[in-house]
Amino acid sequence: KAVFDNYFTQTQNALKALSNERSSSMTKSPAMHNIMMVSFLENFGLPVFEESAMWNPLCAGTNISILDFFGNLEVGCTIIDCQAQLRIVMYLYHGLVINGIMREDEIPLLQFLYKGFKNCKALWHGSLPCRGELVKKFWICFGMGLKESREMSERARLLAQGGPVSSGGVFAEGLKHCRGRKMTPIEPSEISTAFRRICDRDFSDVVDKYHTPEQRKNSTHLEQYVVAVHANDTLDHLDEEVQLHSINFISTAHILEQFVCSIGRVLKWDSLLETFKQKNNLDMRQGFAIIFAQHLLGALDFAQDPLNYQFRNAPMLTRQAPNLLFGVCGFLDTYFTRVSPTSVLWFQGMESGSDSKVELIGSGANR
Image (cartoon, rainbow, N blue to C red; front, side, top):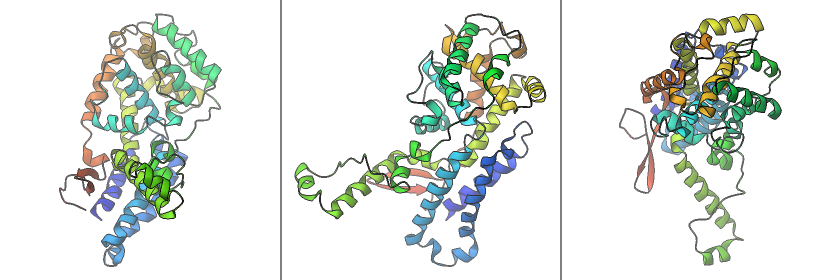
């Protein structure tokens, strides 16, 4: 029950902190209404349920599973990227990793997310992008057409090679194609095979690892054999995905959103983005995405030495320093290493021999 309560404590703390972020419009996102679909589960933590059989060992696992699969994964997937904050951070992190600027395991929270969302079609549009594909794939996954995404990528390549910014300003190229975009939502079945097994009842690709060829031959027609194979495969995937399941998606959505808002302030882009919003009647995040993709991702995609690349062709973006990526990389490391595990991990899955156990972060007590 303490694990269950911890999820809602983290969520409420995140929502309170989010209300203080004035440069974010996340609270106005339609996806935030989905939190109401999860909030009714919090009632199971009321004393009246604690005094009943609701939290005895036979029922507690079911309650935790409902919160995990329905609340955290299904609803959480609609919120964790509702402002494109997940894909912005993941593309930045991936760009730094493939350029050898950061190691994949350097920041634990980002490593968990990076590993957990590697197979997400909505985020990557297939395999992870290589150098030369970052900008194009980012815009495709941002809802832009293939032709337009290629045009934006080519424009970013020219900028990274010292070409001039459009006479219409840093937002001009993106504004041509940004209206009417339709982003593909993140499906929990893309990131969690266990979710696909349990919630979608999809066992089309199960693998039997535990029966001999002879046992398979003699048992494939038996219902008990099918149930055993399905159960074993599902449990194996749950063990593999335990880190992803332990992340509170709603709390993480706030942390990612706070980072994107903060990086705009650190680089002194806030006044530029505010002007973009007023002039074009578009959300500031759209303006941020244009700058982010065409300049930061563009350098990671096409510059010979991205970390030391000098953004001399865009003085309006370099009020803090001409070496943007060096500052962004430093802030990314500082920001996420300061994120406390107690604010994002609602339980800690641990291996204990052949059995797994769940612990509340920081408690040291089995639940």
